[in-house]
Length: 307
Image 1 (cartoon, one colour):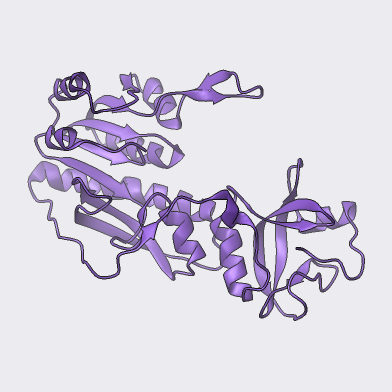
Image 2 (image 1 turned 45 degrees about the vertical axis):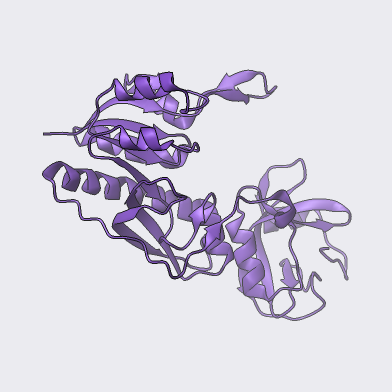
């Protein structure tokens, strides 16, 4: 029999899992997501989360509590009498009473190879740390920060050409399939759980704006991974002629020079060791553009330098 589920999620990353669970016949009795935030051109219109938009199209009731701690929030949650809760980037800590409410537990889809990169920004941190691979894992949630027992995992190689958005989209689709398989195993009573290792624990701290400035004294590959790990948001940036420029995509290149120096008319930039070539960038107040288009509008003088 299909499972009776609550789904809890917020951003685009969560949506494929919700859609796949519905497509495979599970009964989603309610969706929990974050409350709408002001947005739009003037910042005045309340914007529902991507998960709320998807749930309403499917005719699923949506709840947007600010907290799950009050007794009435727990009673409302318990009243759905679900087999399990599926949690994908919900963005809110679940109290122990909520974790204990579903008969079969709460299951989280996490975008890293736990115990590496527990926490808020695992996709960005894996790329920025020059990891060779990432992945998704389904774990049964406990009171800790991504410390629960793991059920299933899928791995993905991280290439130097991969941005945070590229990896995000790949893991979102892969994770949806993984969670469907996990719920099928749970339905059959065959979901196997394994405790996480205490070795290799790292924490994916939230990305701070101060981290986004590019340090050209780093080796070229570290600069490239820093740029790609922050692309498209918040965007790694540098200054050129006192104007801020976000660099969104680049590649390793031949060349050497003073860190930050423009080496040729193809936007090859010297790093502490080696060089990168900029492929895509965004001037302050402008849209994203290819390097060739940028150079047509901003011809660089000899000795130009990113700082």
